[in-house]
Length: 489
Image (cartoon, rainbow, N blue to C red; front, side, top):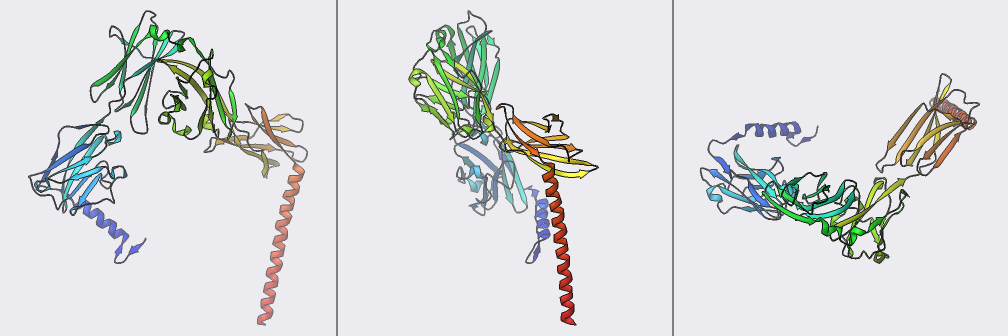
């Protein structure tokens, strides 16, 4: 317990809670605000107002605007001045205190450049001495995003595949498809993601099975604004475009890359076609955000996944022939998996699938003797740096497999596997054992053989060393006692 001059910490805490408990809602005044939500568009300014009744000056009161926590206000006014130390970081420099009518008990808070996460409930609180009054206000934030963009994503066995995408919406919008008569069409899948700015990107997929269907529309609807944006696509027109007759070719076999090396993801158009005016996109499971996006001869950084920023480079020397390669530096275990390479032009996509396998060849195994009990010796084989999960085996001197007593595989922060395998050996004097660890993708292994004679010799030397140190220590202590005895005799 730390004590301050004249005070104890427990006393300070007790006093603080006493003040909180002694505060009461005032019978002298009450606080009112807008009974209806305040609707503000993303990027605009919001004005929140509240009023003390009956009207009176609040110049010498404490006025606090807060959200979830009283202790971390959006804005705090005390003793005629702003208090900045406690203010929430995300509101610093974005709020403006309006006190034109403060003598009549009316105050306002202006929040500049509204963002999606400003959406929600706010509290306006007045405090005078031990009395307070407060009211809540609801700020509703809305963002009207882009019009939907429909593109044809090739054909599947059951029909034509269409994808409708839009971004910049808040809150999460609703997507619907319609045919030319206005009849609703059933979607196959829908994907929605919130970007770094808090705005939603939405993507909906539709399979057109009716060959006679010519016009299909997609609508994005805001539940807050009751507004929508729509686009339509003419299927016969898209089927006649240049890209509809082309194919995208990728590697037919999985691409194997070791951890830390550079990754190359190649794809090309067949037959050869100039792709300089096309959009080319490498992606994982969804189109947005992407691994890499190339549009109009440049990289679109705003649509890139965070984990690939600063690690990608487009090799476009042969783009006039439709051949492009994406270079990803410093391969990580998280890069492992399926990729797609998409070429787009005139609202038509063609794509190829790529399979990337990240591999890690770990350290040579180390075998240590864990202990001796009831005539059995426990051996432990350890190794690290493997990916994917390696295969561990114990073998005797004839190469025959010996089952492990137990085995433990754990993944570190980089996704690499650490191995611990245990074996119980009954006759260590005549049996040599080998621990081998192999990578299933590379077909390579690392192994170490346990030599019982060396281990026993090392073990014996350790015992003799301890005995020798103990003996020397005993002689030294006896010598010290003898010297001390002679000194005082």
